[in-house]
Image 1: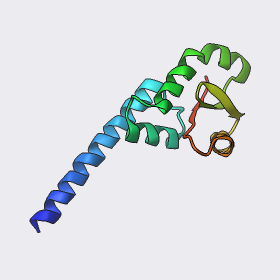
Image 2: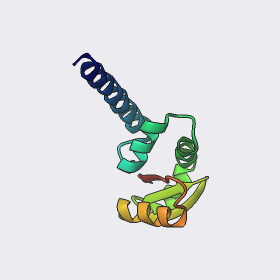
Image 3: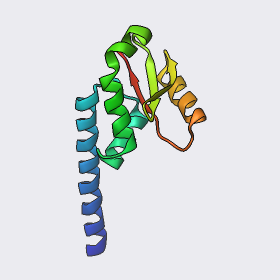
Image 4: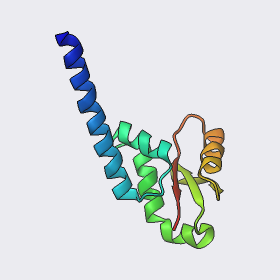
Length: 109
């Protein structure tokens, strides 16, 4: 019973940290981040390729918004792999092009 209680408590702490990380991601990148991108960021932390793609997207947001205003953009390794009016279509196209990487998918303002 004690082992189960400790395991449950550890699960709650882990879930609480993941939720906090997810909330931090939404604050950092805005609410228009694909849920799978946000979940992958929450699981991986800040120092990874996906986070760098998010920073790249933020740095190039103005020029991309001029071309792709209000569309979903999928980025991998600083390269725009897909653009769509649908989050799921951008996600699927990017995953099809690079199945080895989680794309950073975000809706541009």
